Image (cartoon, rainbow, N blue to C red):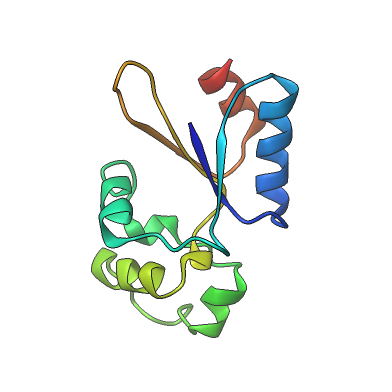
Length: 116
């Protein structure tokens, strides 16, 4: 399982704490140090359109002035590739027996149902 996010994000801290408290192993990928490629984002679009992956409260979102722009998934993908910190966090890749799954954000009830 991989957890993508940034260390100082409150939602990422909650997710990591949840996994640590339940002894769930994960690999943390720090988006402030690692850039995601187009193929990775496109694979995530199998679960969620790129436009819904954007964090409208992020500094990057405001700096790109995306609030008043009509973003289709193609434009959202370009914005994500320009700055990965525009993504909602955490993003979790998980699954068993080769089945790929994807979870975005932190919701304790959803985590309990999905990971316990």
